[in-house]
Image (cartoon, rainbow, N blue to C red; front, side):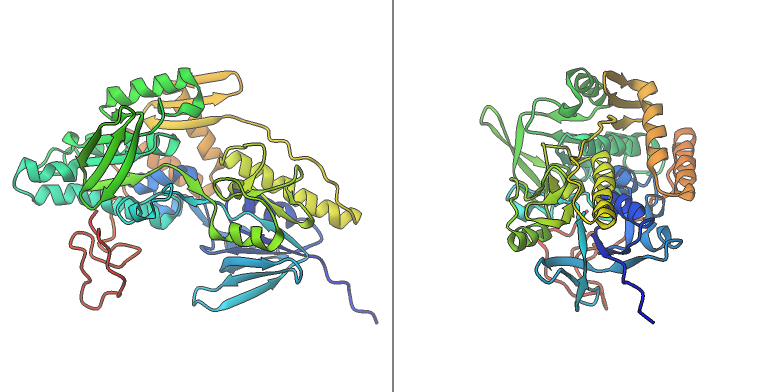
Amino acid sequence: MPEPATRPRVVVIGGGFAGLFAARRLAHGPVEVSVVDDTGVHLFQPLLYQCATGLLSEGQITAPLRRLFRRHANVTTLLAKATGIDPALRTVTAVRPDGTELHIDYDYLLVAAGVEQSYFGHDEFAPHAPGMKSIDDALSIRRRVLGAFEMAETLPTTEQRRPWLTFALVGAGPTGVELAGQIHELATHTLRREFRTIDPAEARVLLFDGGAAPLASFGTKLSDGATHTLQRLGVELHLHTTVTHVDAAGLQVSTAGGSSQRIDARTVLWTAGVAAPPLASAIARATGTGQDRTGRLTVQPDLSLAGHPTIYVAGDVMSLDKLPGVAEVAMQSGLHAAGQILGQIQHGRTTGTRFRYRNLGSAAYISRGQAVVQAGPLRMSGTPAWLVWGLIHIGFLTGYRNRAGALLSWLTTLTLASRRELVFPRRDLDTGDEAFTGTHPPGGPASSPHTDDTP
């Protein structure tokens, strides 16, 4: 009796929007799917800043990949970090959590590895100015922001408190604007009656950007509206300004006119710039694929790699037609790439169907009752946009429990000005160092010393 034919093996690298939507579509096809991800969870990144400021818990913006695919017997989830591929042998090399190497065979490969924070060639800024791309990043930022208020409460003079109550954010795109608004809201609403020595409302929130306006990608009208709202809130905008140095005690900035200024701020957060992960360069070397200036992989119109019709790239790590790195592009490209793979399997040849992105619009939250939304010719701001923003994000959250939990948290914060998620780790999540002293506690994990382990 002949053995049954083996179904094609598809490996999906990454469990973000592109990887999730691709794997969901592949799960209904005649294939065996392996989803390789180094966190094992799907993260709703657009709300990461709300986790960082204690409005939402990490559980409300994440969903375990294993749970999402529990009803699909042909989908396997592997907790590992992909580090390279061999197109000739059709294998993916990955590293397990314990550091050992894993080799995964594939017939078709879909790379949806996302991007990392970029410091524009100044990686030495990273220990002092964390980015926000993962749950670990969000919890580290929560530690720094909430810890700064706690430190200020213990200090005897205004001069000593001032740097701890100064929050500097680098980058005035959606993430920077949303995070600035949430820190201001945290200080003026949530914490206003929590302290005895300090007034949290005296906190300064500074937003730096080399461009001419915040939320520049939203167009002049909405950008001007965002500028007015931020200024009314008291967020200090520093435009046409570049950051030239960051250390444990603050940052140095340079204006377009050439002047330089030192700003004392014990909390500096980096919300500008992205770069492809090292995996992208490894794939480029292995396949002869080009990369753009941020390291993203150049793809064919159908999202495949030139000369490699069984390898597709989707989401933020792909470079095509200057498409933005937003969730909608990731979702749609993941679905398209999965459809191309299934088409090859069903028809025995590449379909070469061009990927066409349908722009459904963008939205950004500024503060309670204030947001901006653009969708085609529609431009909205203020309370109507804020309500639309909420509906959009609730709709795209993964899972009923996450949607219900997020909605309840928002309503509680809106009506009672309280946030449940105000607990923060005393130890730095990357180094294991104590939050305020920069030292290792007895029995604590050893790590390389950092120059800045303060919040």
